Amino acid sequence: MSHTPHPSGRVREVFSAFLLLGLTSFGGPIAHLSYFRTEFVERRRWLSEQAYADLVALCQFLPGPASSQVGFALGLMRGGAWGAAAAWTAFTLPSAIVLVLFALGAAVLEGPVSQGIIHGLKVTAVAIVAHAVWGMAHSLCPDSRRAGIALGAVFTVVLVSGPMGQVAAIMIGALAGMVLCRTHDATEAHTLSLPVSARVGHLATLAFVVLLVGLPLLAWASPSATLAVMDAFYRAGALVFGGGHVVLPLLEAEVVQSGWVTPDDFLAGYGAAQAVPGPLFTFAAYLGTVMGPLGGSLLGAALALVMIFLPGLLLLVAVLPHWNRFRRWVGAQALMRGANAAVVGILGAALYHPVFTSAILGPQEFTLALTGFLLLSVWKLPAWAVVIILAAGGILITL
Image: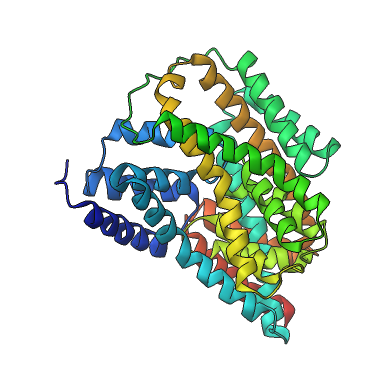
């Protein structure tokens, strides 16, 4: 392992390492985890291969953005609380700043070229989500039982619309996993060195529950737009199970169906979020900038960004003191398999509506989306390159 610098030096080390990753990590959460492994296991030797694999397993099990949670935990292990804050800030800010600038510019864009770019970004969202569904289905639904759980999740979100449908689908999937997915061999659990006391874990649990229950009550009792925004983004962040792409239907239910953001603005921002490095959750900064209640303000962007990340980070801190014991429970591994299969179904339903129905207006858009899908899945182009190509295609279609 590497030498032990002064604590303040460790925080600076964490910040500089994650800032570079925040500027260069394209390709979504799975790619981010690969970047982290290369940087912190192979190059810097902050932790062992097995310890990193266990940390990734924990963060994939919890609701929230898995790559950001892994980064937060790595910062915590390396530099304590300040290290965790440095890791999150450095990894998140580059893409958040770019998306806020895009939102401020998009509001004043006019003319066929800019409309074509926005149209192309909406089509890009179809290709990106289709590619995510395809890849996740291969890895998370490799057998008939988990494919059946995914199909059940599609039925659930179709029958029960909005965020409650997604929560119900994940809960049903997790329970089905407990019953149907126990046949696999349990993976061996290794002890992780996690600098979080049980007391801090309990406080984080309390904060998570109080905010999840209290914010909707406060937003209902008060006409404050700020409280309504805090509630919407906190709830979306708390209910995302399975990575960044799954936040799409949750956010759509919160900000589009409420009338805060137009469907066109929503999909244009989602397409732009694919073109920037770092976590997909920074899409919240774009939405906070363009939406009605606090629109056009940096306060809205900052509030949305912090609130969508907060529940996942609180949950991570809450379970870290207990994770080593929990990992030895075979039932937890079966539960994870079922919940992950349900995530594939939720994403498949979101691929059709709102993504496909809002962006694909005819055969030209379908051809462009199919091109993007093949560029991602067959020719393995990075997401940012596909965004540029499809934005150019959107200009051609519009002109």
